[in-house]
Amino acid sequence: MSLRIALLGLLTAYGSASGYDLAKSFEKSVAHVWQAGHSQIYPELAKMASDGLVTVEAEGARGRKIYTITAEGRAELREWLLGHDPTGPARSEVALQAFLVPLLETPEAVAVLERLRAHSEQKLAQLEALWTAKHSAPIPEGTARVKFGNLALDLGIRQTRMVLQWADDAIAEVQARS
Image 1 (tube, rainbow, N blue to C red):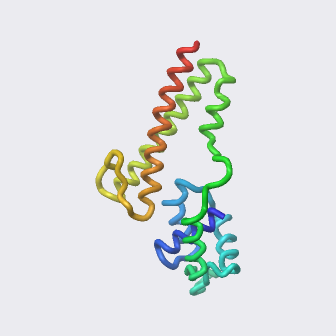
Image 2: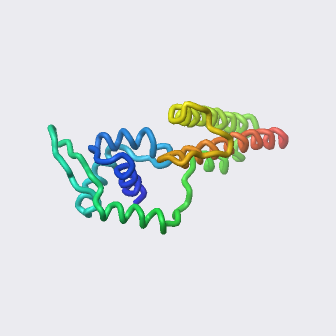
Image 3: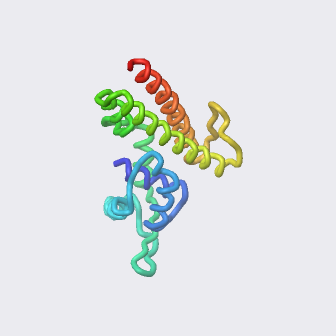
């Protein structure tokens, strides 16, 4: 369901688009919070068309279809935003490794935690570069400008900063116990 909602959101924010254009927009924005590849996007667009949430506005060379959100699609997006509580367990490889790292010897556990920290530093740099590219200024601490995608980008930056702090604390704890 979330892929469907993400695609409806992209069509609402950016207007009519081909499956290819939606996949590229997805990679540059929504993919930071929800993973989906071309092989998932195209079948979902076909289902959305059959469900009346989007229409094929035009069909071009090599079967290229331009999708437009319908009133029913806008209503579904709005209903989901206003009434959907996130469900299901969070899936996080970082959390899974944190859960399992005590099974390792201290030097190995520290190495895993340092690798997780380095990964988070790299992710933070990428997210901050996205912010800078969108705003030509570094993200103000504790501030989010409300434009499409900014709240999610701000959330990602804050979560990644928190993971870095957690990694520092976890490394110190594991080293103190040895």
